[in-house]
Amino acid sequence: MAAHLSYGRVNLNILREAARKELREFLDKCAGSKAIVWDEYLTGPFGLIAQYSLLKEHEVEKMFTLKNGRLPPADVKNIIFFVRPRLELMDIIADNITSEDRHHSSRDFHILFVPRRSMLCEQRLKEQGVLASFINIDEYILDLIPYDGDLLSMEYESAFRECYLENDQTSLYHTAKGLMTLQALYGTIPQIYGKGECARLVANMMLRMKREFAGSQNQILPVFDTLLLLDRNVDLLTPLATQLTYEGLIDEIYGISNGYVKLPPEKFAQKKQGEGSKDLPTEPKKLQLNSAEELYAEIRDKNFNAVGAALSKKAKIISAAFEERHNAKTVGEIKQFVSQLPHMQAARSSLANHTSIAELIKDITSAYIIQCFPIKSHYVNTYIEDCIAQKDPLIKILRLVCMQSVCNNGLKHKVMDYYKREILQTYGYEHILTLNNLEKAGLLKPQTGSRNNYPTIRKTLKLWMEDANEQNPNDISYVYSGYSPLSIRLTQILARPGWRSIEEVLKMLPGPHFEERQQLPSGLHKKRQQGENRTTLVFFLGGVTYAEIAALRFLSQVEDSGMEYVIATTKLINGTTWIKSLMDRPESPTQ
Image (tube, rainbow, N blue to C red; front, side, top):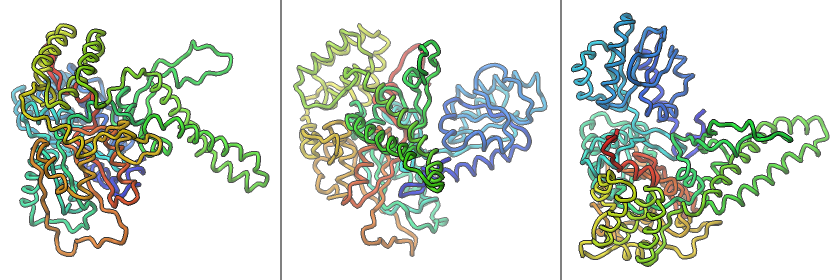
């Protein structure tokens, strides 16, 4: 099921298997038949670790979503709650248990906190009078979840908000713990580089944990040569722009959640000749997206303008393969053709799906695209004014305004006041909280008279390429059709020629930059073979976009780069989900 996790330079299946083993051990603690009550947010991440078949093997007979009131009927001995450590969820659990006690006094209750136990939550359960009802209270440390052969995510949805709005370092602690788990499985990472306040904190926590476990050093040959920790606020611009890779656009328009996307069903309906469209499906088409699908692995990181040609080429290859049946004369040749048939039919089905997705994306007007172009301020002001006047979606307006602010080291007071007034009058005064949050996070700010360093950063790091080649790229700028993500340019320069060559620019970017070395146990120093690539784990604190991931995959494939990248993040984001995580509405507090 997860073979694609072991294709890359680093076998991420080891991490998945370790997570599955822990899950099995916990389930076996609860002897007898079981029903799991899920915190809905956890079902997606858990689906990447264990399918229902694994749970069934360990006597899980029913699964329910956590909600108020009585639990649905289930003839089982054990009820297990899988939840995040959130106080509001404890109230729901307490409600479930008090309703349950009156009807089924013989059941055993267990609670599994993901990713950490919380004293506050246990205290809340005690206050509600249900803590004593639990036979087992445990934690399941699910920090880094393998999403693909080179991609790990914590799916910690509020990490950026917590770090930059609430000054809460919980997500950083979980990151440090996740990196310790990773090093326990894949060996100590000898070199650590970082940029940003959060990166510094994570490195400090990790080094402290390392000292605390000094006696139990694992004798594993290091798989990773370098760890690069990058704060999201070092590069606030990149997520605001619309990603222009195939995978990036799918995420921007339809949203990829835990490796799946839900699409409008009309394009996927199998119409038979002579039939009308009366029986068109109404349920969204759900597709899994990862490198296990050969065609998707081939096209996902291409600029969308290069996808059409790639699909057309693939269609010709598949068509030619099917034509081969006419040339099969002998029994042996026919047998060989038949054995290849399932693979060919899967390829044809995959091609049909991706052709439909590409058509859906093409149908979305260019008005959707928010791009980075070096253009004059007054044109931008007029464009944003027009968008507000036309009542374009608020998220689009906020992305544009924040982008203008980030590129200009803030907005002129007059312009900023005008935008705020227009936004509040057009979209509602409740959004004053959101605007305040964007200011606090540094995405929106008034100009203070200090020098705007962005033009210098742009020129020194070559962030804008006039002639980006979208079809056959020769630079990472193809992922945004001309704009190179600053985060990835920093990663590229670290590999060669090194950060010392851009010392001045690094000082202009927020937060410290640093380098640390971790001592390896004797005998574990890697002897590199001639021409063998180094492996760097790039960890984005606060989120990463699919376009940035595509740019790193591009760098891994460049012949003379000498470097391969594995990507880890607190959350897979796009501009919409990122801005939404910072939005507040008085009537519905952020969960």
